[in-house]
Image 1 (tube, rainbow, N blue to C red):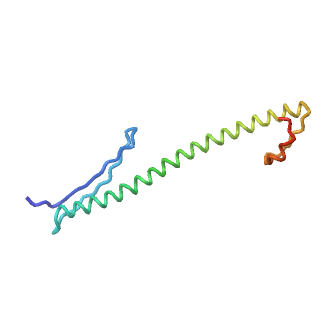
Image 2: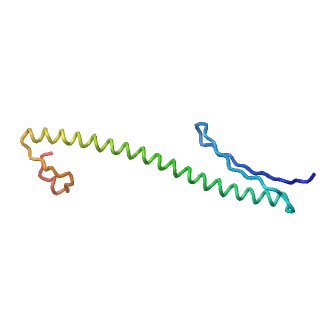
Image 3: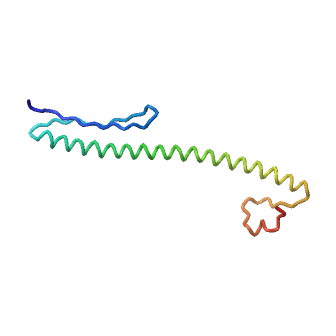
Length: 112
């Protein structure tokens, strides 16, 4: 029996029922099937790693975007609380600087 084609595939599971397959089929021609298979395996592995790297980068970007939304929410909540605290302090007659870009030296004389 003469082998005329070889195929190599690799499957990666990401969980949550997500899978990705990278594979290739080649005709053997005048070469040895084992040599053609080795070449296919090298090609698939390189493409598999590139695609896995791109997918991992997408995943990291997605997580960073989620974290950015969380941090922005915390900033908004902090600004609301600072505004409320400033109103309370001002109502008590305590002068509070309006500049949010204060240094530690600017805050030194505050009673809190």
